[in-house]
Image (cartoon, rainbow, N blue to C red; front, top):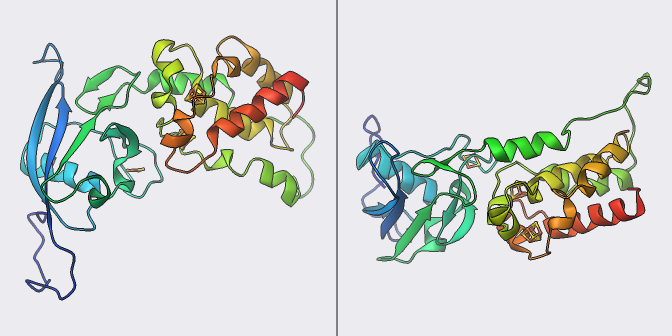
Length: 256
Ligand code: SF4
Ligand code: SF4
Ligand code: FES
């Protein structure tokens, strides 16, 4: 891909055994609320290196083809969760998706905003409803007992129970791939349930009952139809549907 203007190349013209460049078309669903009545596709021809990620080619489009292209990203390493988008019809993080895994030489990569949230501009969606659901599950540690002299100890087995759910980076890939969330935005959604799971199954937290009550409301776990879209979409390989089932069981038996 093209270098930034201030960079100079030190690479030899052809490296023995190097993977060939990929010539791809990047087809992006564009929408500018100040100009457009509805979204439209625009396509850019990009030359990508074998190790480039989809976020690299999107940066290439912004830096060298159209600086008005709007999208969210920060860490570039799959940690911040800010660059979730629909890539070839599937929710993924652009910085964790290699170009060569989604397109062959001469092929096309389609990129759209994640679904179920209002598009502000291009690939940028309004995340407020998603974070409102997150706030609704009280995503913070609650323990009113006097603090012990040292740490609040957990056994390995206790820590294991919340190991998956504490890996969540709140990228919204799961919630915005859930058909129940698409048709009913009041459903708290899989990401919020994963976050609730993280505290419900934390042996040190004392608000289990309050959280189970939130999960038992008609916006909570019972809306899930176990369709597995969320699990397939998670870039952290969190077994979301299994965690939702664990929360359902905890609600049913009123204990974690
Ligand atoms: S398993 Fe439940 S939360 Fe996940 S996509 Fe299906 S309905 Fe939505
Ligand atoms: S559970 Fe996975 S897909 Fe859902 S918000 Fe967390 S990291 Fe993203
Ligand atoms: S930019 Fe942070 S997760 Fe992709």
